[in-house]
Length: 377
Image 1 (cartoon, rainbow, N blue to C red):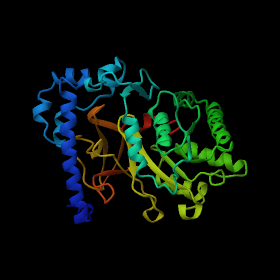
Image 2 (cartoon, rainbow, N blue to C red):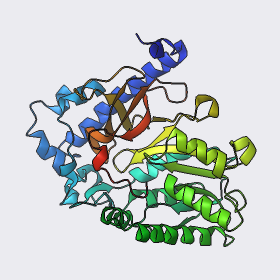
Image 3 (cartoon, helix red, strand yellow):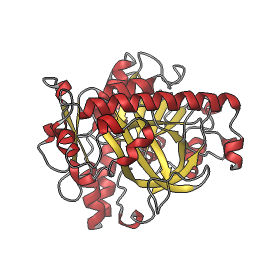
Image 4 (cartoon, one colour):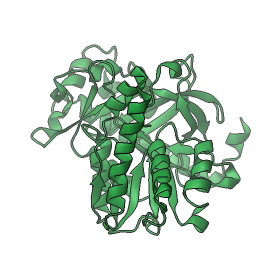
């Protein structure tokens, strides 16, 4: 047993065991929903015929999801997208959210209310002191057919505020990078930041915001050029996300952009890790004492992340060990029994707030990192 494992207290171990029990129960319920003729989606009901086991009788726990083949990217490219809509949700309004799209057909995911539920759960983790109820929000991130834009807007409304958004097309950003048009890229980034500055200085009582790390840094610089700062325009709470969110960047952001730790600068920042498939993983509180280490914990039981061996995606690595991130999505709208993310990181132990495994040091998976265009993220 590793030192990380032995450091888990009896109280956390008991909470982790209880959480595992809830996950097993939730897995069973989710699988029965998606593979029952009355409630399942056309995609999974068709896929069931190809399996060498019966999900309705052979899945008895979360670990049994390893019986499924890995979820493939290509299943989400092209339509008809309504093959993913469970019969149990027939007739309800459906959103379509897209990811990527920089090469070929983008991946599409249908959503009914998952993006609302995910961000309502996330809302419970935000301290009201720094994300005041009734305050308005700025969404400084991708717009268009992306879940994030509507999810942040719902988060603002859920917290009794309104959301101000900018126009940002990340696909155009990626094209500019691939063409080497860096002057155009800088102008487009400036265009996005100008929109944000205009909104922030227009008297809208915006105290909270989402921003990607790169855009947050550019916004801080733009405000400084105008003789002001994030604090002075009224920002109290920021949540951000993306693989650019490193301990080094966090240290720079806290010390240079935010005027020091929240006790000194007055601006609270929380990193998140998420995507269209998973929802939103929250971070363990980051501190200078812990060298700004960032550890993410998925919103179990609705989503689960594992850190698995590079040579065997069904084998979880030891605590503190490095592996690839494997994602499971378990909601009544969408079922993903194991998807290999384009990220790697280190496995983190449960703790009192999130009594299940987490992942730290998230970065592009080393085998594909050189071919990944990060863009605004």
